[in-house]
Length: 113
Length: 129
Image 1 (spheres, rainbow over the protein chains, first blue to last red):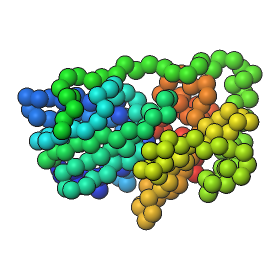
Image 2: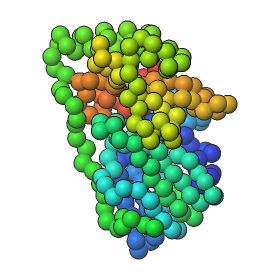
Image 3: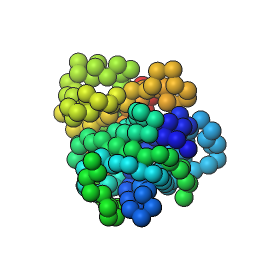
């Protein structure tokens, strides 16, 4: 799906970013996220509230962010600009640090683990 | 320009903060949090009128719809998240999170409306004023 379709379909507020991997060979970037299923419009109450998903960005043209460990960072919001540019607003609540990560890619897959 | 993300960045899961095994302080925190949860205002600016301090990171204040507040009297921090206007369901609701000062990690990071530890991302961690 496009990055715009991702933002329109899923709500990422308060999900947590656990890891980022960049696969140079396939020109893709994978984000592992502990996702809030219960916040989605199609959530079924008998399903788990949260769980791991992967966002697999393909055709990655750029990644803009601090080269540090991404672990247990709370996602406040994700903003799409220019059809293929996605910015994650995230916070490290333990250290009270705010940061933004930007991915420029052609498409993204949403994969439930 | 890409800033050189060409290797695996994978943090280790671990705890942070202090273990909350002291029963008397734990009960006190529970009661304090429950009282706070009951009195959280719809307008977060009202917290400033009752002694809370805003501790929002400047960039976060400028760029996001979230704000942090600290109460010196209870030493409890809350985060206010503004909902998206006209958005369906929970997306449109303003809410707070109460940080657990005795947290050991992600699984007990917040306190619910009754002052009980709850995980990050959980429904119970979201307190609607």
